[in-house]
Length: 373
Ligand SMILES: C[S@@+](CC[C@H](N)C(=O)[O-])C[C@H]1O[C@@H](n2cnc3c(N)ncnc32)[C@H](O)[C@@H]1O
Picture 1 (cartoon, helix red, strand yellow):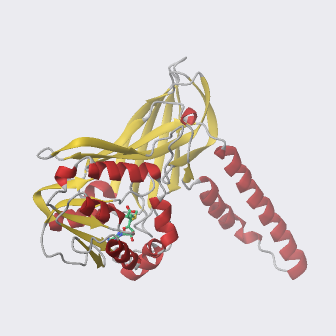
Picture 2 (picture 1 turned 180 degrees about the vertical axis):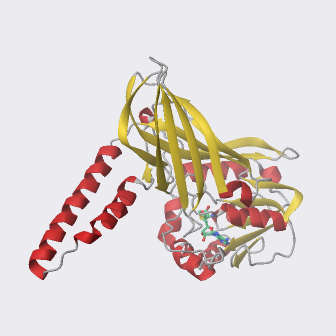
Picture 3 (picture 1 turned 90 degrees about the horizontal axis):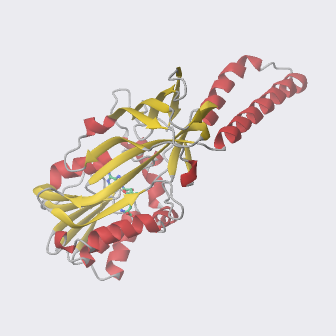
């Protein structure tokens, strides 16, 4: 989890500027409070803990690479599960705390903490297992999977195993009070702008109204065209959830995930519902590989839940205006998500949808929206 900002990370040639990337992205991971937020996510912790300790055969006597070890928690569990050697790589100064934790738990003979970027460091040997908690909001935000793929291509033995081994992205139509809230926030910001224009003119003699169009665009983007973090209640889902992407972490490539495109459909399951947009979430699985299947398969899901939310929550993509839909209406959705040109760790989402009404068979005019995610 992270909070990448919109500052440009790409150079004119499209290459990533490492200095800017470190300042924008990695810096927050250097703070213990941020690592603690992840360590307090019980769903996340239980899934990794169970995946490791219910599949000890994958770790006993084996070599492991933990990509982005943070506090070192996963590396320590791998060592406790019997690993012969664990390489725990961390780009930020959190590596110092990981090292302290390893020593305090008397695992320094097994866990070697390496401070550096995964892409730049060298290991003394190939490994049997790569473990990593790389998932960002709606799976791909942060683009940390690139680093895991790079590590896999360089350091995983031919019959090695990925933890997690598989991932999926999901979408479903929702109802949400956020539509009204964001619209009212936007209108409030515009009212405030018009007061500001009047005051600046009368107090300081400068007419700023020429900037109104740009300000309006900026505010619309911020309030209505940016995905929103939310922990939804399951009863806010009004149609069938659909998978928009599945990946095998052993074989997926950076090109596969650079742009995610999906044509999907969802049927409205509620009798009379207000359709306010879509929610996106993900799950990952620990299944081992076909050559080395898990003894115990574990799932980590970030789907809307009655009682076990995660720090990832769901990402909400709101549609303006919201529409009334009926049970049996079919939504035909085109989804595309690609990296922002300005910041490769952020995403641009293009969503369009047609509604085939169950009562008349009529196709409602399609709508389309772009979002920054
Ligand atoms: C989501 S946190 C997970 C931390 C820890 N593994 C856990 O599960 O609590 C991801 C960590 O990976 C680190 N990281 C991300 N990309 C990296 C890279 N290319 N090389 C080394 N560390 C990286 C971040 O600094 C961060 O501490």
